[in-house]
Image (cartoon, rainbow, N blue to C red; front, top):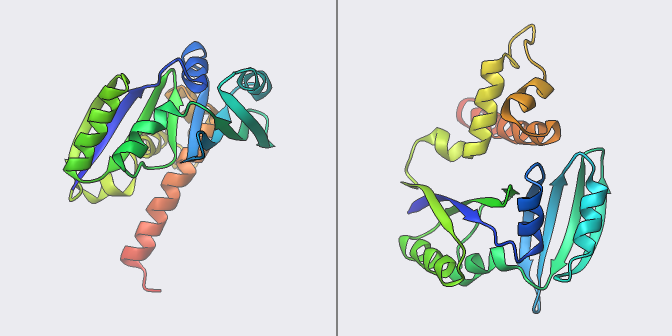
Length: 213
């Protein structure tokens, strides 16, 4: 069973594609998404220096039915958004392919990871082509790949390795979380969240493999 990573060019005809392309510093993390009756509904984590102007811009979009601010911190906000044009998700739903959540959209591109049958992966590629959505298959590997690859996403591995190489885990600590985020060119909040998830997966794996409970 193949596991594939794809980079999708999000159409700028939809709100998230236009805002992301025009403001490449913004990070949209889609936590979950589902199809409604003629609409799409998504739970989205927005990371921005000031989320409020971005939220205001989303509200002004004609393809956004509703937007609810669920929580807000200094440089991030959690939003529930309903749209009449959930185009980025349509090929996934048409192909019936489970999409790994969360996934990020930044600078007009979405990073997808899917694990499915070869037939459904082919159907997904056809659906993207039919909808005129440009994409690139970054890699395809068999699910029986290395355990490290199955344990962490590519992004989690990238951030974890960057933190280790910067000295974040050394004692005394040689780099702060802010230093790691700056090296990667991402927001500190995003770096913290990705690193926390990666650490959690590594700890869970270690306890499961090496500790009797």
